[in-house]
Image 1 (spheres, rainbow, N blue to C red):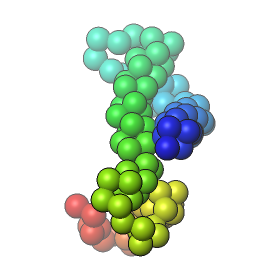
Image 2: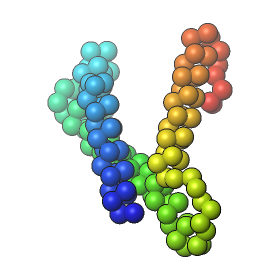
Image 3: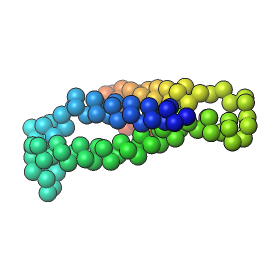
Image 4: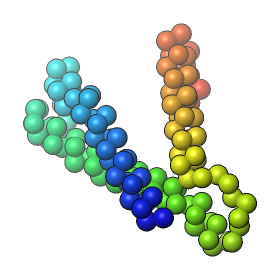
Length: 118
């Protein structure tokens, strides 16, 4: 269980940092004339965004780690052997559902609908 928990937390950080690096948020913010009040544009903005991103990712990574070991804990605590939904399967299902909802929302917004998530 500890190995699964640690791997989920590590890969959550890996995925988040890879996605963040591809977006160049600080550079795009500066190009569009935006700024964060009290933070200078450029490198200080990138450092600030990275600090905030790491803080948010810690909460998300710990939550995903807990969700990933939850089936094992329930099986051990309640001695239920019929729990067949694995933790990785549960994470995959949640990820697919969230991605599908985002894609549907984008399609609806392209067709000038208000959307259904809000």
